[in-house]
Image (tube, rainbow, N blue to C red; front, side, top):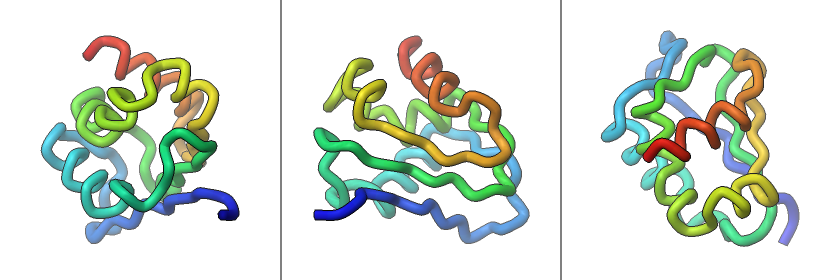
Length: 99
């Protein structure tokens, strides 16, 4: 199996911020769940127009990943491409640690 990469697609192209636990869970279920092996390195690419991920969205979208592989798994296996979010990976992990 080659590189495991999920490129998130959003129906609403005008969105610049992602918020809401239910919205995060829904996107995860539709676009990520059962499509990659979380125990091997994987990449999540967030569209360039997104400049902010609310804690509620992060916990909804990444919560299941975090429950399955924990902080260490996130640090070792998870990469994020988010052109408009500074320190996206660190920010995501920090928001998950307060769950």
